Image (cartoon, rainbow, N blue to C red):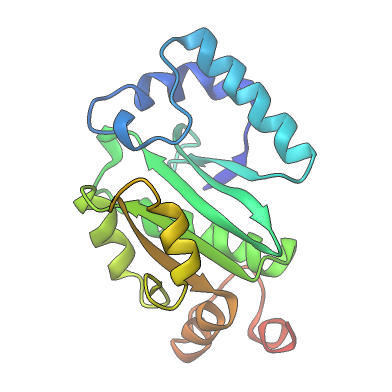
Length: 187
């Protein structure tokens, strides 16, 4: 479902990213394939330096269909950025990709909090975030971050996924993850 970013998937990902329903919501936009290659190289290097975590989302046949990233990592927290190619919208890939990524972040990397800044006009992403039972709208509880995000206008809503709430949700619902429940309790 996920793999580390590499240059081999760049052509497919670039084609998927440029769709008009996807492009406005991609954090690192590229106006050409060559620019996308350059951004992908920078992303891989930034991950090696510990500045971000980036994965390619794969379909059931191993084809690249989007990316999921944790940007601006600081104090065991970072901002989620994810996009899927238009042909994969509404096909059930978003939630399993996020679960796989959150399991890696929380239980392998040691991240404690994942933030999501979502444009208030991005109704699709707002709905997707609010469907996740372990997500907390944080406009009021993380007011300083919310105000920083919206310094130039009322653009974003802020959401938070704390490790403990994510873990509690999975334990209560008996959902399996990449680690067993005993390891989760000890984490």
